[in-house]
Image (cartoon, rainbow, N blue to C red; front, side, top):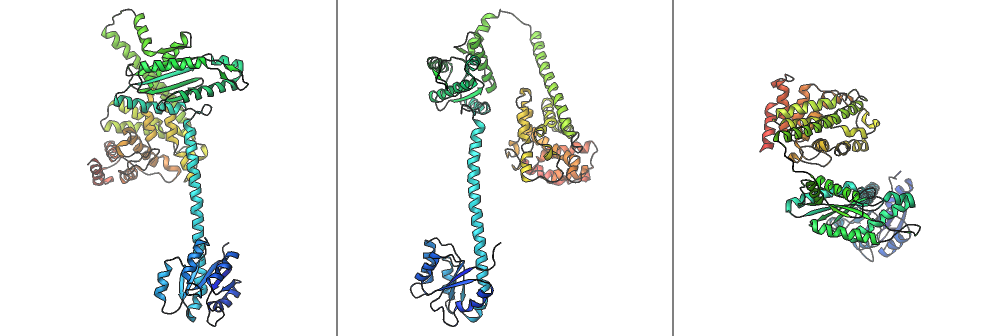
Length: 568
């Protein structure tokens, strides 16, 4: 507990024992408050006392016999004594006192009988203010240290999130993102981009013969070899198991093939030392795909082609390099010259489309069961996902979107909260407000949902809507703080319907639910900040057509003005 008064005061006066001195004026107060006081008559003597003892406050005359209090203050600062100092002057020196206050004195008083009565209060105030400053500086230092620790930890976590723990190379997830960036640049600036898929031959045999620890040593040694041999502009990653992948910007098939052959031969010529000292020789198979020589329209296609080429290299006997374009040539040479009618081609394409649609519906139906099980835990959320999906589709149609886009938005509305299966029941079912830590965990559900759905190729568009359905129109949402038209259109629609249904039904766990008109007024109130005003406008029109609200139930003029303001 902090003391209201100082324990020890140093009084520096030219004549401390003279009648009317501050020392004598404070004696009674010091005795009553059990404070200790010491005297000094010169700057030199005062500095000696400060060097040998701790004081809570210094009370000093302006003019001392050897120096002024300004000189005294400068020496205190030079010695890093952090202590409050009160300045005493004589009548007529007020202007001088005001000027020297800027040097760092805590306060000043003009010596007189009346001012000495106020002196105990001034001392207590100065000490309290000083303690407050000390606390603030301590907190600032602690905060700065914590921020530094967090930044360091953040950098480490960020690095760990993109690195393979065993080899130190980039991991599968990072390579997918990096490859997407590289492919986008290659198509934009029209330069070649190649991909090598590398697999260690007979790696299972190595593990079975020498043990998994030895297998791990080989993976680490091979990773070091790739790092030292490839260019800085190349990206190498551990793709999974004993498989590695390399992106080669500005290199076409010819250069990629030469590099792959050199890698294959150098690896074959090397002896990889195991932990026991036993040398082991290995070989690798490599598949290559290259843009623009291969018909590639996206990075997934490039990786698929490189993987096909690798599979052919393994099938042909291993320890070789295969180019995807040569596989196509082989297929062409093996296929007889057959002619198909346009009708047959159309039927075949339609059948493939039907199969794709059946797969998509089967996945969504299976996911529905999972969502229903999740919502069944809380009666307030029962049916929330289905309603959001249904009304999102109706709103999308109201806005004139095509049926393909309507279906995507409906599916995304149905799946928008799928990431909540990764959130604990303690948080999901908690009544009332979340703590900051709980809210941060809940905010992760769009990213979790995106990661669950993203691997399903035919739900790629839905995955992006799920990821961004909590973005705000003004850029204050999460997870990526996208703004306005940066937010996918489907996510802007799902955002409005998610909020509307929460206010109408699912919000009952936190506070009273709103009726239809109240919920609409809330949407209009936050149009332009949280919601896309155009989506809100079309949803309100939808409710008007269905008879859910009356025209006089909301501020039509305000909504239309907001829409015009953001359309300008």
